[in-house]
Length: 113
Image 1 (cartoon, rainbow, N blue to C red):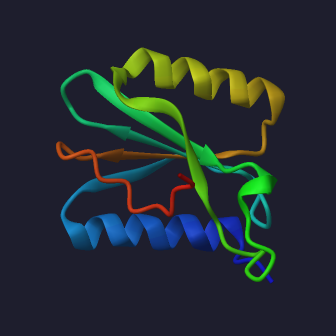
Image 2: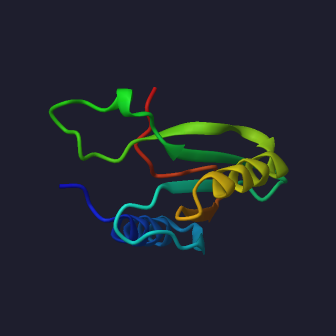
């Protein structure tokens, strides 16, 4: 069984606090299974955006894991990440949007290579 989206987001925010970076929930989505998007702002005008990995990236032995893929590459203008989030919201209004502010660009997510 997959961890509820709201619990995953809360845990990620706490992890950021422990690691010394700032994280805030910009938009609250569906508690049970809302898609999660994570924007990482480097505080220099650049950002990255991470979103749910495609289903093909999941291992059959661990289908409940949350994995993410890069939607907007690190070092891109922050406006690019904001525009992608706006497009995702038009498609699905029940998404979570989490913003992490970290000069090192850390995201603390499991990424699909």
